[in-house]
Amino acid sequence: MGMQSVAVACGALTLCLALTTATNPGFVVRITQAGLDYAQQQAIASLEKKLAQLRLPDISGDSRVLRVGKVHYELSRLRLRDFHLPYSRITPISNKGLQVSISNAFAELDGDWRVKFLFIRDHGSFDLKVENIYIKILLRLGSDTSGKPTISTPDCSAHISKVRVLFSGKLGWLYNLFHSVIESRLRKILENKVCDKVAMSVYNELQTYIRTLPVTARIDNKIGIDYSLVAPPRATTKSLDADLKGEFYSLAHRSPVPFSPLPLAFPSDHERMVYFGASSYFFSTAGIAYHKAGALVFEITEAMIPKDVEFKLNTSVFSAFIPQLEEKYPNMPMKFRLSTPNAPFLTVGEGGISFQPIVDVQAYAIFPNSSLAPLFLLSLTGNVSAVINVRSGRIVGSLDVGRIRLSLKDSAVGTFQVRMMQSLINILTSNMLLPRLNARLDEGFPLPLLDRIQLSNILVRFHQNFLLLGADVRFQPRR
Ligand SMILES: *[C@@H]1O[C@H](CO)[C@@H](O)[C@H](O)[C@H]1NC(C)=O
Ligand SMILES: *[C@@H]1O[C@H](CO)[C@@H](O)[C@H](O)[C@H]1NC(C)=O
Ligand SMILES: *[C@@H]1O[C@H](CO)[C@@H](O)[C@H](O)[C@H]1NC(C)=O
Image (tube, rainbow, N blue to C red):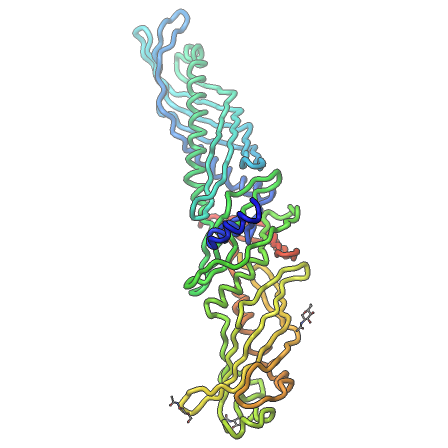
């Protein structure tokens, strides 16, 4: 596509946004071989139980037996006693999906037999040992229109190489003559049933489970996170990667983000079972969403000042630096309103997450009738850095502010030396604003986790343009 046609495509703004945001994910989840191995253990244990519940149909037919002639046989009440899958392996196959190979599986079953030949009828029971079962399953991952993952089994094969039957009954010798007939029919039935059961389990259990991915995580009454898949999960030779949108949005006013995520240069780490890559985009959309939702507005009043801070928020105190206050608004309580004129833009670099917010501080005097008189407007800026961790499946953080720079933007009470306000602003920031923000950040934001997954062994590492979180996973069975 030449420059000309890009410009044309972007003329339709929404289309252009759709095209650009579809390219790079804002959030990546990587499941490594260690993670796949863990998932496989859980899945195989569940599949073992499902296979042991296989129902087999009755089998009947006629067979010719030497010196006896035509024999009619019937096998009924076939019952699997157990199904063991002792060896299995899961391997990601580039651009195809996940290959599950099960080898040397074995099963035991029993049932009743019945035969008719000449004028003789007889019946009894039998035991069957099925050994050397090989099952090969290809799992293909996809995504549906809501961005939820899907999983299917485009390919399954089961091969049984050994069946041993043990008949009981007076005529046991006879049945051994034709057991090969029965064995081959049972083998065929079992081979088909195994793949049917696998397909059903994948659809009913595995797909239901992976669809617990919270593609929209509502955080509070204002903000959500969009964790929908932007493309089907990708198998590489070493991992399974899921590209998620990774975008915070205001529940009330969602609008397109005016920039798109940069590509994430994921490292080849593979010690942990799962890695999450949270891009600068992800964090910046948090700033936009909170800004848009009006959540980045704070009011500071006298009542909010902690008792141990020796400071009164009133015009008598401030008239020490602003003489005009004394004349115009003598001895009145005051109030500060903090807001961000623009959404803060967060950047992630090797040194961590940081941003330089601009905060407007509007000071008011409060009249006895509670109406407000605007006094002055300060602009604050400073370097804010974040410490990040993961707790209970959530990204938690806390902010630290460097030196704050003040400037006077507007005043209804004459000019004054903003320097004089420095220590006051430092007190307000460190005693009131930061504790509030940090209390919120300490509650954290949910990671895109499937149901009943717990993380441990957390790793937090900053890379250019994204935060890398690594963890081991534990599946909590339902109690
Ligand atoms: C303002 O603060 C000063 C100093 O703490 C105090 O003496 C005065 O009573 C306060 N005025 C009001 C209206 O709260
Ligand atoms: C409140 O009091 C101030 C000063 O006395 C006055 O200028 C203002 O109009 C009053 N506002 C209302 C809503 O009564
Ligand atoms: C913020 O940090 C940058 C570089 O780390 C520095 O150049 C800048 O002066 C700092 N700003 C403030 C207000 O401290």
